[in-house]
Length: 432
Image 1 (cartoon, helix red, strand yellow):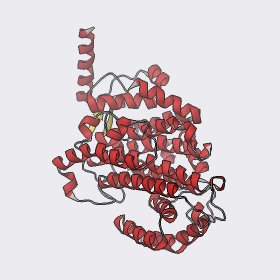
Image 2 (spheres, one colour):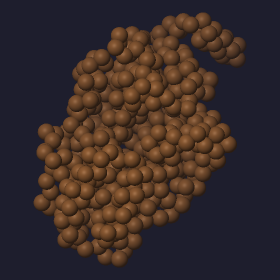
Image 3 (cartoon, rainbow, N blue to C red):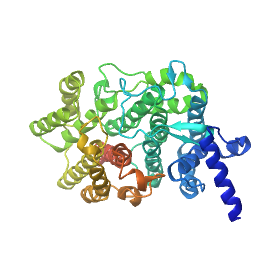
Image 4 (tube, helix red, strand yellow):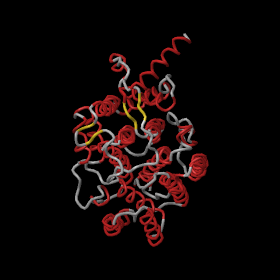
């Protein structure tokens, strides 16, 4: 048995250094599906282990998906399969694999460590930033663990679950491939989860126009839930070289505008208008919100959301809970954005190796403090502590800023979802 294992390892190493991929066992691939195939390959790429992805968590993930959408794992297999196909074809003539870097939105991150993944001989340009997106699959499973506690309708919960599953693959695609398609998927799929959370948070408020519901002066043709459902179906229906145009045309606002709407809603319920305005301005400046979006928020969104919530009278307990929940969410998201590398700051100080070790260690304590402020459940303590969440995390968290962004943004976005659900609860007229 030992000799066989050594021989297998030798063959794998020989194949990876020879520039040739191993013969593909197509029957085994088909049986497992490309989600599991790519996760197994990710483990080998990041750790060298041939043991494959955590079977227990993978089983939990699949069972979770099937609770809300029996077709979601088929969509995920098609999505990961599309990434494989894009690599096999070297992308397209207009969007070659590895060809989109340091131009436009294709930012160049600290990690530049092109490594060949044995499975399908795929070149992965940022291995840590590629694997750390598995943190978003942990959001998926926590959505299921909270199944009986949601206040928002089930179709919104399903949309969030679909969105985070899609974000896992989409962001992995970008950091693995350095393609324009991957970059579009990465950015637009954050739009998806934030927009579903926003529409869930305001759905109980009366007299709203598209300014608040759709974050648009004119109504959008589809709701966030409808657009997310169609996006999930796209992976199975369209060839990969047609994905980019479909994703670009999604009827959804950019996530920075959606975050702005969410924050304005929370602060409107929590603070007097002058105090809220001052804090909103600070956050707009901090995140460099474009002038057009500032104008929309100040001239249209804030007046309408204040009018729509004017009847809401929170008691002291609700105000304290809301304050703690808002603080927890903002702490986690701000700490996540600190490591994003571009949005909040591009300071080289945050690239310092020692600073990254300290930053990784602090994840546990930042989340511990934030959680002490909120009423939100904790269904995955390891994720809060930043431990064993994705393959290679023990190496990647202390070394790569953007990997910490993926991990902590997963924690922060989950709190954002919980906060949106809490707003849904306290704005329900039956509860007031």
